[in-house]
Length: 369
Ligand SMILES: Cc1ncc(COP(=O)(O)O)c(C=O)c1O
Image (cartoon, rainbow, N blue to C red; front, side):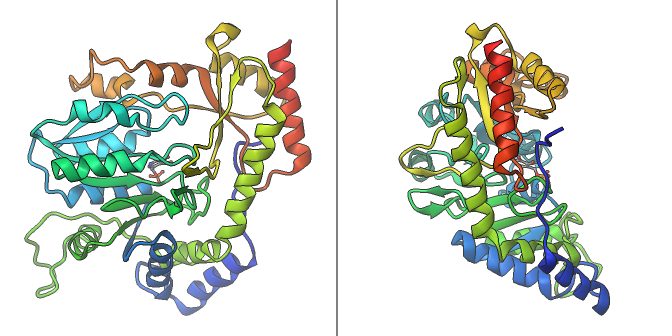
């Protein structure tokens, strides 16, 4: 079976982790954390980095900085991971959903303004599968209506919008370093910002809102969202080779583009003129006239040794939210179609040309049969 993903770990990761173990700095103090935060912020063009335990809590802490009142709204795409909506709900807010652009699968920026109300506090664009969102219209709306922009750049390490790194374009940005991400810490995440106030708030939320002036005295509710020095050590080693990792992802994306370009009924990822797509996961969408949906396609690929993963199911289609009375009569046709017709192919950093040829041949066989 050709797996969807495998992390690529090297000697440096072993060396840095070994250093943590030898010196005893295994919890959330130690030199690798600050170094990883600083270097990742620099890489993305932001001033501060605050490392946290995963991407989900990075979003929760970032939204936590907004001090939402119950009923305050945050606009986001419906086509994303549940973490985005949870971050808002756990902070007493209300996610307001927008459909996707049919080409890039990111938030359809032309539909955002209609969703802005007097309760809107923020927009959360999510760079999907390695392709950036169209950020300029989002920034313009944020300026016009005085909204905070929280980028979810979990899937877009190294991706660029008009020459600037994703994760360096909002008021805050959130990352995941889960094992399937371009650089990984096993489990891990980070919030980046240029704002002293937001950085301070995320640091505080991460560490139980301990006060500096008096230990074990709390005036606000916090969390334990801390990352360990061991995880940061892995992250730093990974970051030192990020150019090579991003290049490999782009090579995989371009090789699939070439290998699959004439397959009938299959829509491939795009790269808009203003974008650098890092093809975090190589997604494809089957046209409905093929008579096959992604589930059936995945089953047939698996029979022939190719593993895949389905696309996100929209936030508005999640029973967990319907039970709360949310999004019940909402419909987003693009997100609904790609959720049913889309999947991603093996996209891991350990892929070889031979394995990719085998994937493209299998895809052709399955669809041309
Ligand atoms: C777009 C996006 N945001 C957030 C997350 C959450 O990250 P984590 O799995 O580290 O909690 C993911 C996870 O894969 C993601 O794809």
